Length: 88
Image 1 (cartoon, rainbow, N blue to C red):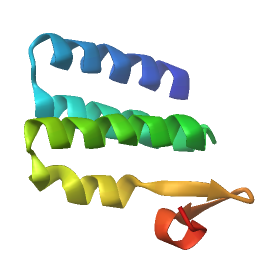
Image 2 (image 1 turned 30 degrees about the vertical axis):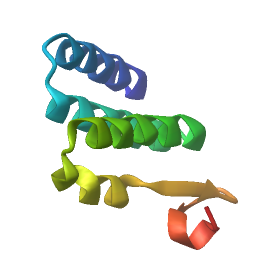
Image 3 (image 1 turned 180 degrees about the horizontal axis):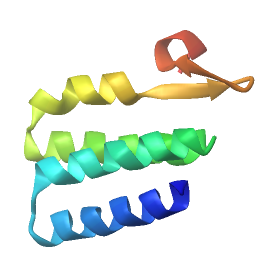
């Protein structure tokens, strides 16, 4: 089911890009990051959050920065650890 959810999120993200909806692009990347973490893929999650951060900077939408902070975590020794605690 995670794969289906990721496919749906990716499709929504493509629509948001087509229609230049930066806020929906940010949410799409955050959702993809959370799904990646649920699947145990911290690298994909970090990449998706990086895309969200880039959109926030490019579009000057600082209002969403707290969402990135809430979503940004690392995967260390089989456990989710907040990024600040894992030394990144």
